[in-house]
Amino acid sequence: MVFRRVLNFTAKEAKQPFTLMIFTQPETKPYILYNDLFPVAWKVITFNDSSSHASVVFEMNLKAFVSHKTQGNVVRAATSKDVSEGQSVSVVMAGNLDAPIFKESSGVAVPGATVHIENNTGSFQSLGLMISGTPAVLFPNVGPENNVEIKMSPKIYLAVNQTHFEAGGIIRSHPNTVSCIDLSTFHKDSVDVAVGQDENGFWTITTN
Image (tube, rainbow, N blue to C red; front, side, top):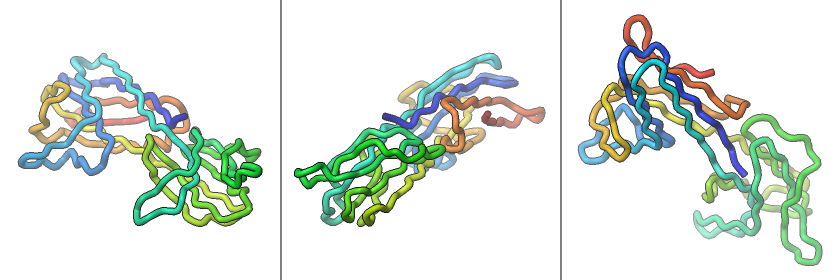
């Protein structure tokens, strides 16, 4: 199950064609150029006129998990369960197996981009969340009858450039403007993004 947002882009009052580059990692630093290493864009969209539209889907696969004992920085999942944002799940012991398992929680669903995990095993457990198969956060030694809430803040970085780029091309010029969007602040399935120019010709990125 997933965290999912549909991003609907519209070229609004753009006076010339432009390329919109979408980054998913902050360390790409779109404003900084490197001698032999360039930022990697997740998506590249070319808009030819002010009436152009495009949509992309941003998804993260989510799994709540109970961790084995860790060695160094290694985290291994003893058991896991697919979850969606806003879901509440409970960890219990599986009868005579003496092993933790997940089940649906009777608790109230939590708002926004949050996953709620209840420890009902009667013992200490290390609870966490995996994003797209990689452990993203771990709460070690959560006590019996205690809960954790994991708040996600997935961000995308939008860069507007008047230079035309093809997918797989090398970014060799500074973008005209860069904007960061925290997708967790939009509590709906789709986000509308308008890209255009103001009366002075400066590029703008607005969301709704």
